[in-house]
Amino acid sequence: METPGGIMKVILHNSMSLDGSFIGIAANMELHYQAVNSFGAQVYMVGSNTTSRESIEQYGETVPPETASDFQKPVRDPALSYWVIPDTKGTLQGILHYHRRFEYCRDVILLISDATPAGYIEYLEQRNYGYIKTGSVHVNYREAFKQLAQRYGVDTILVDTGSRLGNVLLNEGLVDEISLVVTPEILAKNNRHLFEGVEHHIRLRSKKCETMPDGYIWIVFEIIGH
Ligand SMILES: NC(=O)c1ccc[n+]([C@@H]2O[C@H](COP(=O)([O-])OP(=O)(O)OC[C@H]3O[C@@H](n4cnc5c(N)ncnc54)[C@H](OP(=O)(O)O)[C@@H]3O)[C@@H](O)[C@H]2O)c1
Image (cartoon, rainbow, N blue to C red):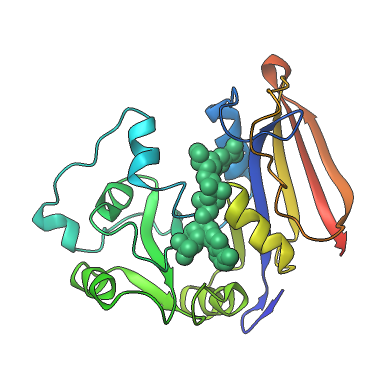
């Protein structure tokens, strides 16, 4: 995608079972993040369901109370990625400090829209979170990506999320590459499928196929046509 700063690359990265399930799989987080880090993206993008309180609690964690330092931008290594989260409804109000405190997060930037509640924008401003406002109801991702390039010098975005956000980006033609760590298993048929919401035929060219330890395989495809 062309941006004011040049060409931006967007990579959709997931772990999935051989049959395309992405929840309840035997994901190997070390291998998953080894692949994530190999792309050197300045933005690590995740959906608001993936970062919700419910998801945090599923991993046995709890959101701690805020302290005064949660109102300041963290001072972190500029080589780290920004975490960019679309959250037009403000569902992450009260828990963003959990993500901001993560040592590998440069800071959290929110993507919001004209429909975002004013109280949530006030919450973001009081805590010095960066945000980009585009779109009337949902985020206009094309415009948001342009602003990420312009305001934050971003040329590579790595999206690590569930099917909802991933499929929206695929349907809007905003993804350049799909990177998958395939887990050696087939799940039961009632599981959600990673490409369940894709609306048109997408043509791919394989770019990488690497055998990883314990039967995992890492494959990368370039999108060559819609
Ligand atoms: N296997 C893996 O590699 C992997 C990786 C990450 C997550 N996961 C799992 O995936 C699950 C969550 O996935 P999910 O598919 O439910 O949610 P998700 O990918 O987190 O997607 C939700 C996001 O999509 C946006 N969105 C939804 N509909 C939209 C639309 N029509 N237009 C524009 N934006 C839209 C939402 O924005 P708004 O909030 O603004 O509506 C929200 O930020 C969790 O169980 C998580 O553990 C698996």
